[in-house]
Image (tube, rainbow, N blue to C red; front, side, top):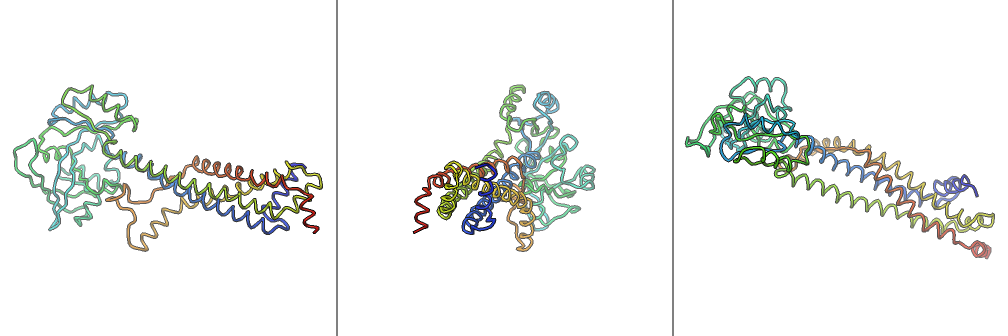
Length: 410
């Protein structure tokens, strides 16, 4: 029997060209299970990839990868910036001042972590501002940028004035300080940073923190996100005594690890669903073999070898897997692109937010469809379908034609 003849019979059993409605129904049922399982896995993996991407490219692009602190106010920060910038793995370094404050607007009071930044050296945090808001902030010595969450809780918008209360700083004996600041813009990064950040210029931040001309530390951006521990130690060794470093793994590492763990666990869970769908091919093909015993006996009497019969059912399993993989991959790719819009529409319809940055790292459902994931899922599913077809194929090759034909005659 030639390969084209084997394929022709396998196609007839799989897609029902002519007779054989039971085998077609069972094949379609197996395909449907594969399509749903593969599509679901690709959608979920794309969402988890989206969280991973947003964590790396959005959140970690806004926070310093390494932060250099000093036990006392950093008065010689310009000299130390030059030392830090000389490290080969440092891409950017800027000074910052940090303070805790109360923000008052009418009868509303909110707490936030105030940060004074040298905007000319580190402008990433304000990248979500419009050009007009940015220009207004840079032109005002009393300019303020609040995170969206803080601004919403205070009920303020750009162009309004707020009262800032800063308690006595640890390095100063002065009493609590009151300042009237102009809200130049609202920071809307779509991340957890919006819930508790307030940005002022570096000079004002140092004054509010009671540091004078000193700063709280240095914000360092590295060329390798996952080498920050090593880079931090090397920077600390290059600096004089009295300095220490922290990195993003200390502040956001647990979140990143949780995202990676969730991605792996969900992948294992859904791969098991694909395995169940693939091995459903076993039961389907066993029933097809039972239904086609007469056809198998006739093929054997016409000269087909047991190997020919076995290959027919292996090819049928491969065809079921191929159709399921192709349609499931298309369904998963299309579904992953539609999910963010569907979630947004459902949020508007129900007037509620499923993701909020006071709980989740981002306020939207991110999606990142990777071609390698589609290949991985599709390849694994196809391989499992072919393996699952081996047992029914062996059963089919072992059918005794004389016994079957004798039973049919009786």
